[in-house]
Image 1 (cartoon, rainbow, N blue to C red):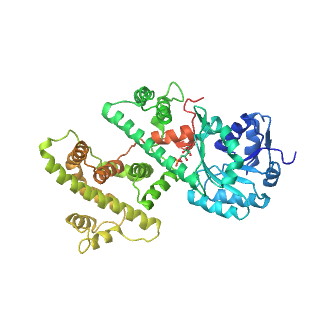
Image 2 (cartoon, rainbow, N blue to C red):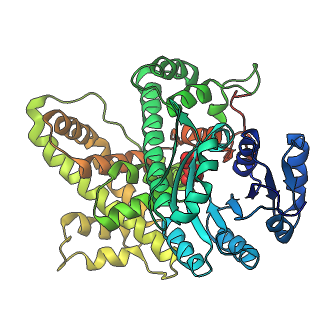
Image 3 (cartoon, helix red, strand yellow):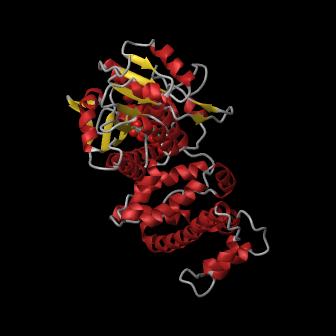
Length: 470
Ligand code: 6PG
């Protein structure tokens, strides 16, 4: 049958598959296409080929199976694959056809694609789709932007498949170009901060109250009905208690503490820096994922780990201020050193970080006794792992004065004095010297809602689990 399906879904990953099933369940006929035909066949088999589903095996067949104006939902990996797919579709599309990019695309890419397709009269919509693979099936929240005419063509469909809050469909049109993807990016930035905060609380429940994952799970569960009621807190208590087999402990203990990312958190942080509008918790959550990925460095730096121990008397606040300032200075130099080491490597400059410390000893604004000491400590040593060498040099200071640092941060908070630089300097140090972080929980949560996969500490490979969702 030529040109009969209401809509098309291109890309049959977990999100595309479930979105297609959602559309079918709402009575729309759906053509599907995937670059690899095996995936299309597997989908047909798994879904039992419900009525209204039409599998196609070439872009041409896919496009010509759609009724006009054609409405195509793209579920392909953000970045170059979206441009490739658009290039393949373009010759087959006509004035008034609508392309809806449902991936986590960069909003500036969506701005560009919207403009490029405008000339051909093809209505481009960049649409953030949230709720993971389960949301795609049962009803996602959707943030659309781009062609207003195109939105008019698909609005009815979107309202049908969207999540509902007391009957109100969770879908909106935000404006031209990449506005929908911009809103989705900020959504993801908030998601990063919330997950980072959950993992931090989990860390304190463990270290402070000696709780294991199952006890912590109970705590999160008890919080999940009150003011903290949320998808992520519920996901947390489920993830923490999940066991693959009764005989084994909670799986979370065997998830590698490396939290991955696909870019949206970073873009939010970049946007924040570009606009000069602070969103430090989002940036910190992104940094948290970077730190988690520095597994090798953390293993080595963990010998410099220290904790503050019991707090000092309040009368010592002056000393807390002095020592805290000193450690924040050192931490800032260390952060800069690590950044220089990485840039020298990745950008191919090949300079020795020690040279920077050499020229910073005099004349510049950051010259200091610390710089002089740092340079002396690097002299005559191999020109690698410079930051670790510096940490070795200053380790004793950190160990002895950590208590002042912690006291300063706590005192500032109690006094209502903002101290974001100092507290982030302290947290940077605590993070990079942690052999084991609670990023395993962030990674497990990503797998819980997005099937993003995780690595384990007890066997090689990439895994995905259903975390007891059935
Ligand atoms: C959602 C999620 C979803 C996806 C993120 C994860 O709203 O459903 O945000 O879009 O799981 O892309 O992002 P990272 O891979 O960067 O953690």
